[in-house]
Image (tube, rainbow, N blue to C red; front, top):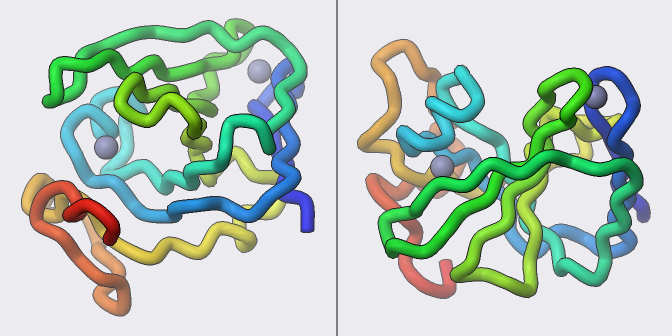
Length: 137
Ligand SMILES: [Zn+2]
Ligand SMILES: [Zn+2]
């Protein structure tokens, strides 16, 4: 099973040779601001299982831990594709809307649900955490 995808214009492409480690919908404010949407559907993959072609441009902000989060965008079309977290250096986050087949994304949880906008529709079949998921969830 290979999950693959890319940005809107095709300048950035990626392939994942392994299944995602984590899949969830993140409703935190940083995801809302950086995407412009109510949440970001995120799949985390082992770094070594992902091959990227093209040169994403990374923008950095600080997470609540005080450690850096770098979000990777296509410099040509602006699509948000990747997230690199200093607190999880062995993994890469991919925005699931950029998958060639978005149906391959299977979210398991809602994170930061207490930050969700009133017009956000949470999937109530998923495990929902008001804030970040506890370790190991
Ligand atoms: Zn692009
Ligand atoms: Zn988030």
